[in-house]
Image 1 (tube, rainbow over the protein chains, first blue to last red):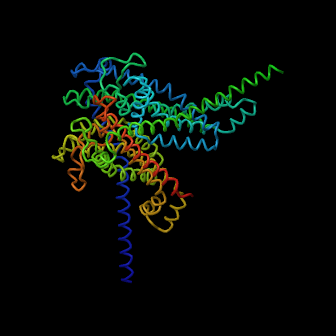
Image 2: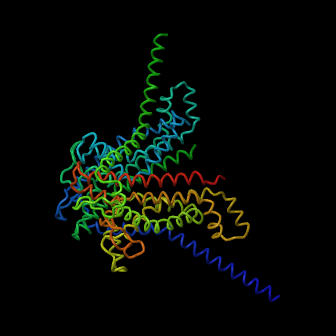
Image 3: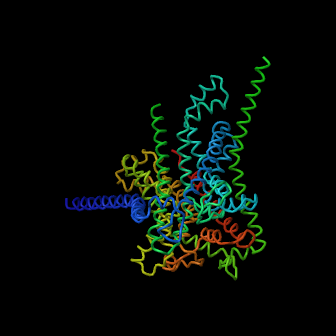
Length: 299
Length: 306
């Protein structure tokens, strides 16, 4: 009797210990899941708070300046818009075309596997190395000038192309084969089928991936530094061959300024401008993705 | 009849043309890879005719622009490894525990909120993280650690650690969710607790995916540039890991930061310093490439099939 009591007491102790261990572990997991989000949230609130007095219409329309009150972001903002616009123009046809080739023309071939492994590897290359590619290829080999819009756009296009290709492939894969067969059965050619059946279905998925890729490109700094883009420009770019600066480059330049009005005013304002652009691009991408899933669920 | 044939011929031509155009687009990715390798190797080759291979890989001083010029890459590798080690110590446990929470503990509603929120962490530009580290994190840490210098490894590692969490968490979570519930139920049937099921059944079963997520995360950290350039300082030095204070609280220069330093300087296209960019770039490219391949290999080779 007594022995049995002691034994069950020990077992209960053990169970209690295990239960506490489980709770402690779960608490750690919750903390880990929230750590990044809460830290970033706090940093964002702080940066918005500091930007508050500085971010106005004049900040958007002025050029950079030594004087904090006069400083603005028009040239880098237009530079970013120009370059990213070109990246969209280049990467959309190239990325979607590649995805179409891989999904519709080269099913299960050796070539397809080779390209896919290659794309996966490219996605893992650090962005600064793409900057070296741009510098060595477009500037040194092709003799294009340092730091011009076109070289920036080419370099960032190569950088984001793997993301655009992979997400376009996913979108094309999601189109059911039944629809392809129906189209081919009506006597259409392969290209007619792709153009009229596959692509319209895949558009939301393609757009989601492309916009996320462009948002990434919007924040890229290192590749643009390597191709010689200016960290500060006082004039906005006016053509494909004009020098440019971009928002992240200007933020990099300003983060070095020791004056408090820059560290705790102008730079936060520029950061908030950049983050508004990037986060709203991501928001639009999520909107397209949800639309895409809704459509799929209805089927 | 003849007209029909002509039309058919035109359609055929068009079909082939379209296919060829898309093929060449897909082939561009191969050209990109070849371009990266060729550019890095040709300029590095000229560099190594000016600075010996031996000097580059054994020299302990990096001073590409200030006389006497020296091109020893070891201080930069030391800086990169230090930064990577400290960042991994922050990001790996946090990312893994976050993945466990998402996969094993969170219900669908919590997951549907947490996952996109975590993805935002990876979407913030690194230049912004660098600013956060330099202007917000370092002064805050200074109130606890008075000897912390303005530029230091710790702050840069904290922000990059936060940035890498989603990479590790999402791949690890995918691996854990792929573990079939029958394994969990079998373990529960033996009367063990949820903690035991998680740590001794789910995590070991998903280990290949988890380890490959760690390696991929480490590879990202090695290539990370702006945060460590802005907040980590630009002082190339050999780091002595046996002295934690010197490791964590002092500035370093990583390979990437050294490349940015040359990039923003007025180095001309025809100098040793310019070509040293490509030698450092090649070293960086080789390191990340090997890690990415190891990560993919582990994922493929050791994946449990259920």
